[in-house]
Length: 404
Figure 1 (cartoon, rainbow, N blue to C red):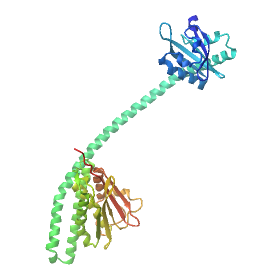
Figure 2 (figure 1 turned 30 degrees about the vertical axis):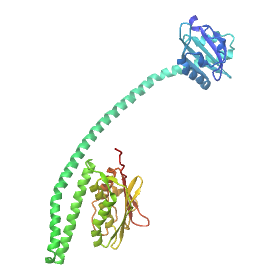
Figure 3 (figure 1 turned 180 degrees about the horizontal axis):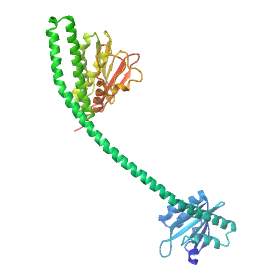
Figure 4 (figure 1 turned 60 degrees about the horizontal axis):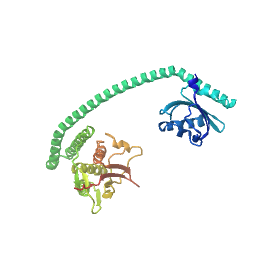
């Protein structure tokens, strides 16, 4: 027990500056240390822990079992420190054994009883907390076991979910493959029916009565809708399966937009709809798939025509909005009802507004357009224009030439 009481006792201010070496059985520290910080009296590797020790005493009133490396004649040694705050001072005791610090305090006859009672009370409080912590070990162990059990159940559920997701992905891929095969096989006979219907309308309409001619027109319209649906389904199947192929190259987007507007002007003229086209001069190139970008523009122009009155107009413009080239298509139709905007960008999504021309919608065109533009790294916006109509915007990233 005598060895356990050998050590040192110090008095520091609240900042940890050494004010007095009250006792030093080891003879390691001298009065030269007075005025320096407690942390500077220990080995360099223990300085951070010594600083935390002082901070804990100042904050909590006491700190216990702080193991620090201290200098010695034969090299660094280990001492265990405890300390308590008393007024505007900090009392620190250190021994070579954990159980010697409190005994050392009690042997310091020149410390008043108030200080000794303070340290004794703090020590008992620390012992009580330690015992309480020990009693919670079994409870913590039970909690840990329960958490482990729940975690194992979660891991098992995640494993089952991953398996089900894999099965669903496999079934979805089979569905897309079947859908692609089915609609591909439908496209050829529908194209043949379209050709026959157009031939009869051009060559045999004079031989038919008004009622039969009208039936022929309706038949052609139905075949045209089915053919459009088949093409859209093929595109949707490719998109959903991640097999939508883009072949981008440096492209003059204004030229593609003009071609789209010119092609649809023939159909628009039959309904007395004017397409007003404008493009900025000197537009930069974009990196785009010519066929797919034209498809997106045709979709939007065709959609605008469905909701434009006879004698109305559609504005199509191409301009630079850095870092994009923007194509905007605006009609003056009824617009999109509130709350139905996002519905149009879902598979088979339609609104309560009906086409003025009576044409049916597959509900896939806008979704396909959005995916095509996103595949180019661009953006697709659809908003209600002010004061009327709908504004569709396609944003294609500018083509950046790489220096060779």
